Image (tube, rainbow, N blue to C red; front, side):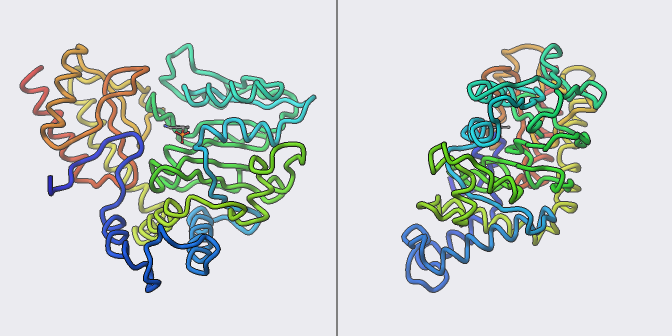
Length: 361
Ligand code: PMP
């Protein structure tokens, strides 16, 4: 295959073509070093510059001051599920969780191993079709933090705006980080696996308020303390340097696109094409999410039968659109349209959906 196809995988996911071309162009000789980025010491000036630029760009895009640090860690977002309570949930205190899908359930389960938790809201009774309203959120008394999942990759829902809570706010933003502007200074800690909106797999971004980063207990393993990584600018041990290099290129690309407001506009336009095909199908396509909770990143929908869903996914693949099968836990179809998905990919999918309905409806 010589042509690139439209990649709707939920993650690892599509990367901007320009970024891949740039990485390809300097694969053998990074920045006149005579070496590939894969071969360069993480203690070299060349790598330190990448590490520093990536941290500065993330803070710039999010409008964050020097009260925050950006860390590049390993272990995936799944390791943040336990690292957050391990560092910040002392005995005698409570951590609050708002459940909006399988990933928030997993985060809660890990926290339960460390201390007392409280479910401040959940939409599980509605099969996670929606995000709770502000009036449905009931925090415990003085929680150490309140944890949310900003975008629910599996169910295809997304917080449209964030509630104002009195507790320090922690968010898993794995599947919508840097897809839209928001007030990041409302959060004490944000984490995200890189493999959807930021770069390749293998690195997890943690954005953490400095006072939090410095407060890790000394009783937990060195590698699992945020303070270790904060004090050492993510260079305590060998970092996932190639993945951080790729993030740095993606962040440069994002700034060239015009930053978060500009990418949000594109993301709205892209998702609208597919939601429109669902809404105008007279019920042939049924979206999983309630309209006011719809995700701009992961669009989940069903067809009249599982057989048709399978046919849809396989015919789409033949038309060079891959990764549309829904998550194994909920079935149906899912189009993941992160920042790097070009408008043309969404146009092609919407056209395919209309044609598929015409021939199978
Ligand atoms: N949180 C969310 C919202 C996710 O979508 C995912 C992965 N799909 C995870 C956490 C787990 O991430 P990882 O595989 O990096 O551990």
